[in-house]
Image (cartoon, rainbow, N blue to C red; front, side, top):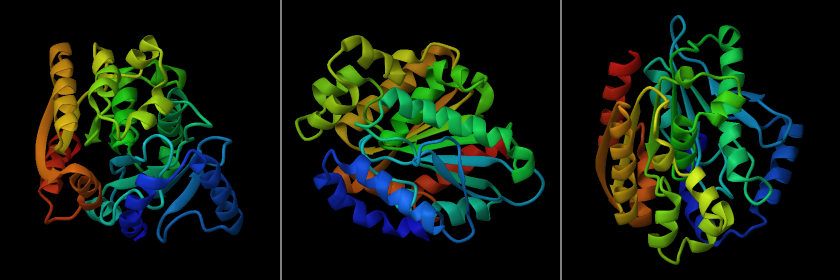
Length: 297
C-alpha cells in the first residue's frame, strides 16, 4: 500500500525547502501523464484545474456506504496523498465497508492557506456531486486530517465561509477528525510553538494578526460548525494544549466534541498517530472506529 512510504517523509519534513511545492507539482504532472497517479484499487480524479487538485477514491461495500475523506499533512508546504495517508487506513476503512478518499491540495508558497482550505471544501463538493455514480452516501461523509491537514479539516469544519463558497451547507460532512494538529489557535502557536517551526508558521500564516486569527479554528468555533468533532493528539505540549482549547471552544458553542490523548512523544509520536491509524493494534484505531460506528453506522 502506498502509505508504507510514510516513514520516508521524516527526513523530508526536516530538510525540504521552499521549492517543494513546485517540485511536487512537476512530479504530479509527469505522473498524471504516465497514468500512474493512484494506488492499485483506487480511482484517480480531479476536483479542480490545478495539477495538485486531485484525489484518489476507493469504493466501499454495500449500498451507499459512508465516505472517509483524508487530508495529508506536511507543514502546508509539502506532502501528498501518495505517501502521507499511512499504511493501513485504506485497507482498514474499506474493510469496514466505508469508501475512502485521499486528496492533494495546492501548497505554500504557490498557494495560500485560505486556498488550501478552499481546496478541501471544493473536494468535498466535487465528491458529493459524483456520489451517485461513485456509490457512496453523500450525507455520511467524515473529514479526517493529520498535522497541517488536521488544521485544515478543523478550519473548514468551523469557518463556514469555505463551505459556503463551495455551495455546501454546514452538514455537508457528518463529522471531523483532526489528528494531532498544533495550529488551531495560530497566534498562540506562533508565540509558544518554539523556534523549530517558526519559519513554517511565518510562511503559512504571515505576520498579520487579523489573518492569523481568521485561520484559527479555535477562534472560529462559534456556530455554525460541522455537526461533530473527534480530536486526537499525542503527548506533545503544544498539540495537547491546542487540542484541548479547540475542544473547549467547540463545547462552549454547543458543538458535540470528544478529545482523546494517545501515547507517543515528539515527532515520533506525531508521525505514529498518522502512520498507525487503521492498525487494529493501535489504540487510536479503536477510538475512531467506535466514534464512527456511533455517528454514521
